[in-house]
Amino acid sequence: MKQLRSAIFGVTLLIQSLGSIAAPPEYTVVIKDHRFEPATITVPAGQKVKLVVENQDATPEEFESHSLKREKVIKGGSKATIYIGPLKPGKYEFVGEYHEKTARGAIVVK
Amino acid sequence: MLGSAIIVFREVLEAALIVAVVMGASRGVRGRGRWIATGIAAGILGACVVAAFAGRISDALEGRGQEIFNATVLLAAVAMLAWHNVWMSAHGRKLAADMRRLGHDVMIGAKPLSAMLAVTALAVLREGSETVLFLYGLMAGGATQVALLGGGTLGLAGGVFLGIMLYQGLLRIPLRRFFRVTGWIVLLLAAGLSASAADFLNQAGVLPALSPQLWDSSSVLSQSSLPGQILHVLVGYQDRPSGIGLLFYVLTIVIIAALMRFTGANEPSAGRQPLTANGMP
Image (cartoon, chains in turn orange, purple):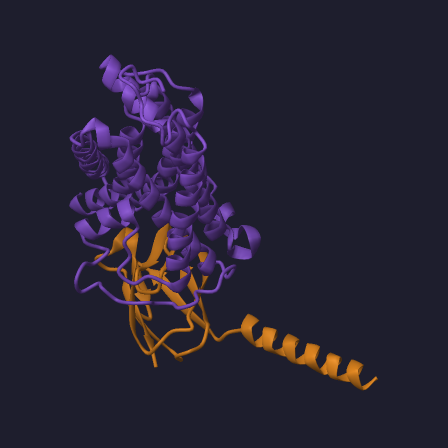
């Protein structure tokens, strides 16, 4: 019985820890007129975060970042979820590859 | 127009370099031009289909469809390159000997050719779908036909030009060492694609990053620069590699090299045994 109870306790802990992994803090960045808004997003260090990129333009855009190792095509008028981290403190730049001159942004990890 | 040319160039470059390596690695094989042309055509067709369904692919698998799709395409290409190399380790020496003896192309089975066709198609499919989406975006954004056509053509020509340069460079390798060198290039190419696949799987949340950034050599050689990008395609160079990417890179080399050694050693006609003048053991 004691063993069963500790087993249940263990499983509950595991589920809770899984739950905390599954629900990282969420940040939203909007693409409009081929620009990111906000252009700088500050996120906590050492933690996985969820980045929702909402493309409000009519044309597709490719979210790309060599430093974050992320690339994802986002169709016009749609959203995409990109998980990043856990990251060390620093500045991680990203661009919209299809409009690299205007679509520039950075994730600041603190 | 220049902006669109640069983007199309970048997308085309990767596919063009891979096709150049494939052309080199299948040198001397009769009918390979037709096979590879078929691969390119199939890739372009596939790219248009993928671009048309981009939204649906993205939304699939709880929004992870695009990552899983990319990783699958990359890993399929890795498998085909591995197969080619393993096949060549068994038959390459005889192939080179026959070519030297006959002084022209030789006939080999369709098996390695179908693998090369698949690699070509997959490379064109992946890069091509992004190019199609980009050009579609420009068109929808009201770009003029001239800018679109001009930029697209310029970019395409630039990418293809570099591919041809690479191919011409490969042809300068003496035939005696040719297949060994192209074998190494194919091996590193496969390892680099495998590392990219790992990063896509990490992005999809399927694999852990292990370490998000092992080092940063972007100040020495940026992956966004032209040499950096060419090295990225050919040997899998990354200026800020992840742990999982490096692990996949090394594992791919070790596994393919082990398979090559194994088949090479088990094929007396093409492996260790020296060849006589007529190319037969």
